[in-house]
Length: 321
Image 1 (tube, rainbow, N blue to C red):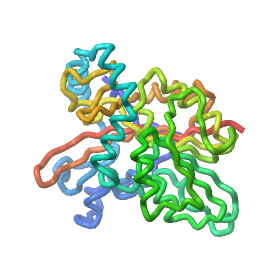
Image 2 (cartoon, rainbow, N blue to C red):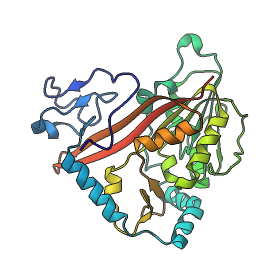
Image 3 (cartoon, helix red, strand yellow):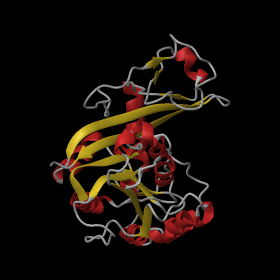
Image 4 (cartoon, helix red, strand yellow):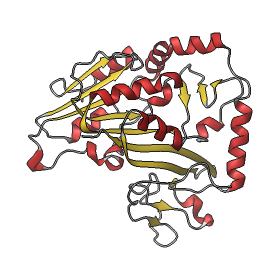
């Protein structure tokens, strides 16, 4: 039986770091050693680092994950319950940010490695106009690293979220620069977006763990609007949860809204994608695939000797010229 996910991409991965052949025991324990380079080749070394990249699942592990999902999705919530969580989604996210403020998510400096298109332009290009729009910006964990590192005089960064509380927190942070950044409250599932820029105007649109929070029936509409506002030649950068991620396997029975779509204990919702679902949805709106990586990562709690298997999907899609 082949794994449901394959580690595929257009192009090649960077040169990989094989830990069993080159040791630096403590220097890089906490995070992956740059662009997915740490590969576990000797099972006896699993506790030497906190994370391993591109971990392949065997047939037994794949079947166990399928069984876990079948079990936790057997009992679906009622239509009335589903409508409640979907219609009150902004309220649940406002509550989330009211509790956690800006302390739950960390600034995503790793994005500039995974998506170098977000990094500052070279010195000779810094006067070029550039527009970046983040959909579901939360409290600024993607926006702030971009603003902090960029010296571009003509950079304009936009962000939206349907949580009013998240936008309030973002605007209150010392890193917020109103001269280069504009953020606003918007429900991205609406048919017509109300945004402070024109169609065909954005060089890059960013969606990081955002589409998964939207009910599946409305996802295609969100992507259609992304296409509408991207410049010809513009990029859509995407990262989100993959099917059989640890977070999906941990759900208890009774939390499933529909297949692979669940509600968390705090009322927020989450979907877990397959590679083919992403290809179908993005391709349907006319975007062209440049990269699609299924990132299977093994995270290790070295103190407790626990192994945690994470699955994320990362993509780059371009609007044709």
